[in-house]
Length: 398
Image (cartoon, rainbow, N blue to C red; front, top):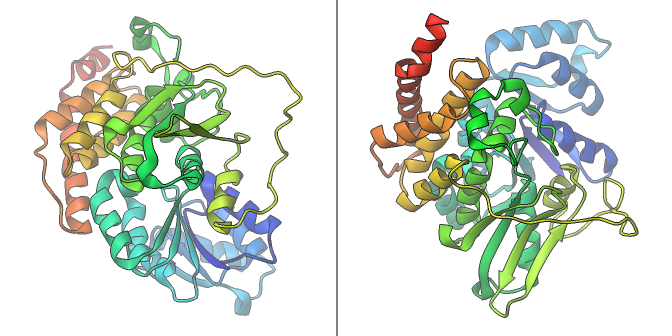
C-alpha cells in the first residue's frame, strides 16, 4: 500500500512512519507533506525515500534543497520537491496513492483532505478541523464518492471498533472518555493563576502545544463530540463525555438492549494509526500488550460544564449547525495562542470563544473556499476581542 502523509513531521506523522517502518513489506511512503521542520523532514527523506515531498512555502523548499545537497543522497535519488497548497492537494490525490493520513493541524489540511475524499481515497483522519470546520461538506463528499474515512483519534477509533459489534440502528449512545486534563480537580477560582507551563503538562498524552491546551480546557473533547456527530451520524444528545483519568477505555457504545461495548488499549497512538491503515484486518500490535494480571482501578465521572465552558459551547455550536463550529475552532486557536503568549489568562480562552460566537453570524457554506473565508473572518473577530479585553489593558499597565 502506498501512502501520503499530510503532516509527516508532527506527532501523528512520526508515529505513522513508525508503523510503516514496522510493516515495511506492506506499506511504502509515496509522499511526505510537511510544514517548516526541515530537520525532521530531511531524516524522513533519507530513511523512507519518498517519491514526492511537499513543504509549506518556497523559502522552506530552498532550505530543504540546500540541506539535501549536503547529504550522501545522489541527486538522481532525490524525491520530487514542491511547496504550497496546490502541491499538497496533488500529493493527496495522486493515482498511485492508496491511503492518505490527514494529520496537518488546522484548516491548512482541509482542502487536501477534501480533495482526497473526492478522489475516493482511504483516509486516516487525525485532523479535527476537517470535520469541525466543514463537517457537512466533507461527509456529503464521502457519501457521494464512497471514500473510506477511518478516524485515528483514539476515541473515535475506539468508537469505530465498538460499532462493529452491532447494527447502527441498535445504537442508543456513544460515550467518549476524557482524562480531565491537568486541572480536573482544580477549583474554578484557581484557574485564573494557571501558567502556560502548567497547562502544557498533560497527565497522559504527549501532544502539540495547541491540542494540549485544548485538552486542559476540554475544548479538544468538544471537538471530538462534533466529529463523532458527523462520523457516526449521531445527534449531540446521543454523544456523552465521561471523565476517565486512567485513559484505558477510549470509547464505549451502548446498544438498545443495554449492552455496552468498550474499546480498551494502551495509550499509544500507533494502535489507532495501524488500525486505520490495515482495516478491516488487524495486524500484530505495534506496542506491548496490556498486562491483565496487574491490579488496576478505573473511575468515571461527569465533566463540570461550569468549569469547562468550552465543552458546553461545542455542544451548543453543533446544535446550531452551519458555520458555528467553524467559528468555534477559529476563535479557540486565536485564544489559545493569546494564552500561550501570556496576553490573556486561562479562563479568558473560553470568554474569547464565547464572545466570538455571539458576534459571528451563522451561515451554511457551500464550498471549501467559503469555509476558509469564514475561518479567517472568525479569527479576525477573535483577535479584536483579545485586543479589546480587560486583560490586554492589565498586561500593558503591568
